[in-house]
Length: 179
Ligand SMILES: [Zn+2]
Image (tube, rainbow, N blue to C red):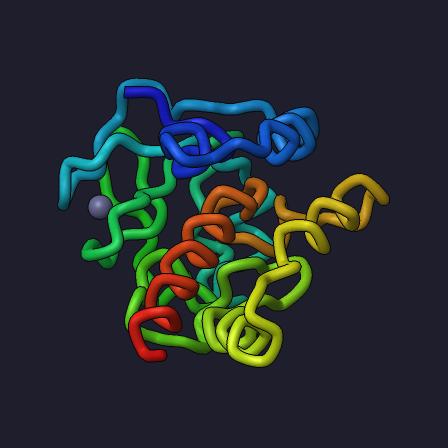
């Protein structure tokens, strides 16, 4: 199974705005982490560059980064492993200086978009106040303006738009059910 730059977006049947994929995948071409699977949960890994680990691991963990260019990121929400090599576990959630939003689905303050600080609670506040969400449009505009730094802000090392689109959809549904 291919897991690209915008995996949730690409596989979503109800996603008519192709521009989301165009804009972000232009900057961050989809990459697969070989055929490597997470040693703990078995999920297929997604490639991240060394700079992402260097930027997001706690300072005391940086000396432990093995000498190689690319690493694998585990996308499984229920797995505590964040980075691994094809043959071993390297770093877990606690080894990072930021919360991995993807792995904290119950935490409304865990970031969905790291470059511009969007969290589920901020997205929800806008939807409650205005009845709609401008988050993906705002992020797309910033990406076009060259203001996105996913390699060093997002633990996945890639564009967040797929995850943001998914979060917006889920929050809209939740707010609708509450009304
Ligand atoms: Zn895993």
